[in-house]
Structure formats: structure tokens, C-alpha cells
Length: 257
Image 1 (tube, helix red, strand yellow):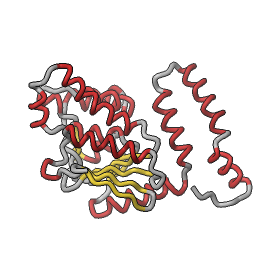
Image 2 (cartoon, helix red, strand yellow):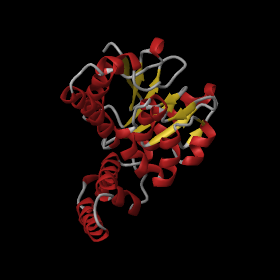
Image 3 (cartoon, one colour):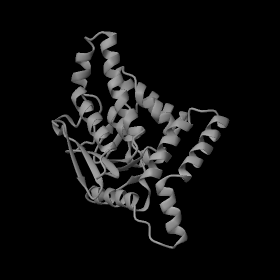
Image 4 (spheres, one colour):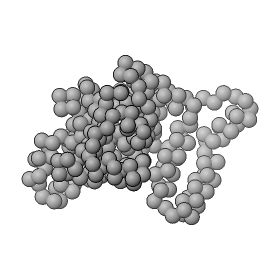
């Protein structure tokens, strides 16, 4: 792959955006490679947790504006196809069967902030800036808003999207965009420790089902969601990991996931 690096170690798959000269800005090729690698990681038995980070000083500066300018010459149908391309990436990350952690090593702006938004967890350096700046250049944060409303609620989403203002990592934590702020020289170690904790202490089968149910349940009415939950609960009882986990607990055995 030309625009990213992918490696696996200790059951952690690390995806590293690799356009440092462009601050890891998103273009069609990078989005394509991200979609491919996330698809491959979903069935990679070596991988239990995925870490997404950037090469260089930035996490991701959003869409490559030179690329966007070129797209302005396209037809509506061509632009719709390109928009759906990004939509499919965000959806793939959001619904991925494995935990995805954003290791935010620098600024995460516009679409780059969107990438962090759709991850399950985000750890950031204190110096990173976050923001959905699309309205400041006459654009619309159309795709990410669907995920952001789910993550932090309508009020905070309006605050960030309609103002387009840039916030600090500490503010991003307050808003619920990220989970933890960690010094740069400790970030990778902290994320690795957290990823190993998840992969060691939690059932991958249970994580996948929990993520799937959380994503699907929010679009249902309360009664529909509860029935969906009851069915999921019943199915989970027959899963191999559930049988293994309960047997180990009752026998006071250590569980090895």
C-alpha cells in the first residue's frame, strides 16, 4: 500500500496513515486503502484490537483540498460516488467487529476528526487540536454528523459543527470525543497497554456482538430495541466464548482469551 502502513504485533493491528507531507489528508486512494485494510483486519485471526494513527506530526488534516477542488468539476453522480466511498469507510470502522482505537498523535481536523469520531476509543497528545471546520470553507460535515450525534448528542454536535471552531485535546475529552489525554512520549505505550488489556481480558466474540447491537439498537423504538436485546441475550448464551467464560468462572479458573 502506498498511503498507509499496516503491521501486526501481540494481537494488535496498527494502521498508520502515511502521507506526512500532506498531514495525512484523505484522498480517494488513501480512503480505498483504509477500506481494504480494515476489511482484511476483520478476518485476520492474528488481530484482536486495531490501532489507527498517523505518520509525522499530524493525525489527519481531513480531506485533501486539492482533491476536493478537482471534484468540483465532476457531475453530481460522480461526487455522490466519491461521498459514498468515504461513507463506507466511516461505516466500516464504526461497525467493525474488533475494537478500533484512535492514537491521535497530532491535529485531527475535519475528516480527520471524523476518523477519530468513528473509532471506539481515542487517546490523544495534549498538543492536538480537534475540529469540524467544514462550514468555515463553505463545505458541510455531512457524513460525520450522523456519527457525532450518536456519540455526544445533538446539543454538543450543533456547538461544534455549526461554529466550526477548533478545540484542544482537553476540551475534546470534555465533549466526549476522546477518552484520554496522554503525553506524546507515553502515547504509544499507553495505547498498547490498553489494547493488550482488552485483548487479554475480554472475549472477542462478545465485543463483536456488543458493538453490533449498540450500532443497530439505536435506530429502533424502545420496544423493538428491547426485543432485539432479548434475542441477542438469548443467542449469546449459546456462544462458545460464553460457555467457556462461565465454566472458567465457576471453576475459579483463569480465562485465556
